[in-house]
Length: 157
Image (tube, rainbow, N blue to C red):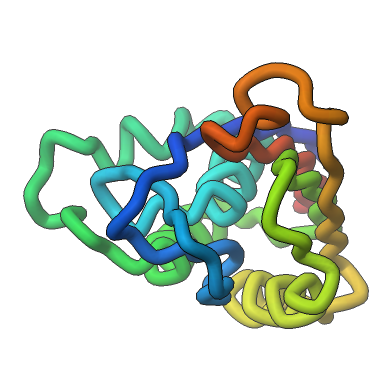
């Protein structure tokens, strides 16, 4: 049996926050605002995985009203998602994610993001694809007000 899930997440860019994407701290004057580390890439991947397994979303499992998740490392939250999937007999076939951001340029960080996500999902980095695109200065991402990520995951049983 195979299932596909789609994840989407968005966070506002603000000063005085680190920019964490796929567990990589990217040097930039702005960071993403959120209850946890606001790792928009890992959040979208988790939502895709949970969606494929029909297990809800990250808001259900890690509510932003719970102080336990304040400043949480999203890769550790991904570890918990992987435990949930394993309990149900699911394994990751592949994940494909697209970061939508006008700035900063992310190409030099993509490989480490892939490796981090793959490691926490227990798969080969060849099963994970991460790419980045701009929106040609259109919308909130194009204006540099925030970042968004779309992710698709294939699960196998």
